[in-house]
Image 1 (cartoon, helix red, strand yellow):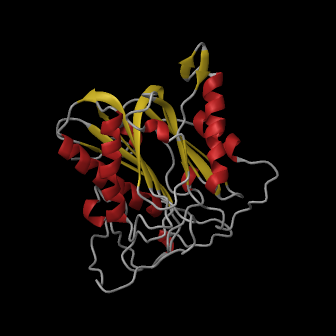
Image 2 (cartoon, helix red, strand yellow):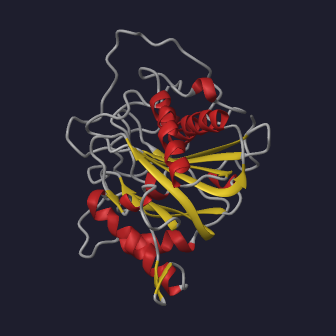
Image 3 (cartoon, one colour):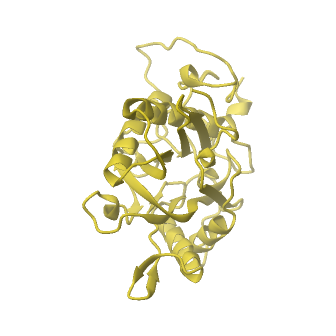
Amino acid sequence: MTPGPNNLITDVAGLKVGNAQDERLKSGVTVLTAGAPFTAGVHVMGGAPGTRETDLLAPDKLVQQVDALVLSGGSALGLSAASGVADALRAARRGFDVGGQRVPIVPAAILFDLLNGGGKDWADNPYPALGAEALAAASDVFDLGTAGAGAGATTADLKGGLGSASTILPDGTTVGALVAVNAVGSVCVQASRCFWAAPFEQDGEFGDLGHTTPDPHAIPPLKTHQPGQATTLAIVATDAKLDKAGCTRLATTAHDGLARAIVPAHTPFDGDLVFGVSSGDRNPDPVLLSHAAATCLSRAVARGVYHATPAPNDTHPCWSARA
């Protein structure tokens, strides 16, 4: 398996990603969309999730496809980013047709970044406008690191960020991952520069530092013990043909990628969530597809932290500053 041409989730044909962020706010929004509705599922393994319209992604629910997925900072306040996206899609005549009325289907998930040193004293909620801006910016190529939903993200001991990666299976099927890394745990092995995801690195995409042996008795660094103050959000996508049940299974297996790249993951204080997306008609081996989703997501986690950049009033250092 090799990375796609851009090593981004948008290597899956038809998908586009847009970012919007506010430097003073130290927060932002990331939107994944496509030129036509696409199939999606979701699986939540963290103990403190914040979501909108994820129930409709269950296989037994009426609506079969969505118009966009939104990842946002801002905790529960950031869920309104999806309203900005939905309004913009409706203005473009996108959405589920109900008697001639268009209702855009825009599931969303949020992470907590309210205590990261940014200015949160807004008079009006900034997230609807950030959502609309991110949708308008949707493209095949987008920034990683301190961008979009990863603009204010942190981990136990480093700045987090927005990461993405892709891989092409031997039969030509493409798998991509997108993640906003804002974890209770750490992505590096015990204060080193080496990533937990190192075994899955391809083409030196996050420093080519190789492996280090962890102390099996060491207690990992932890960012917080306060409920709801973390959360890693991810999307895994493929051009394989999957229904909602298949997308849900893809998302479920991709959680292994979080557990391989973040230690610890899926804690009671994270809201860790993965969306699964299908936008094609290929029929790969399902076991290989699941494996690719997990390894691709591990790589995306490391890339998000690797590409983070410093900013005034940061509460956490960047990986690039670690000796």
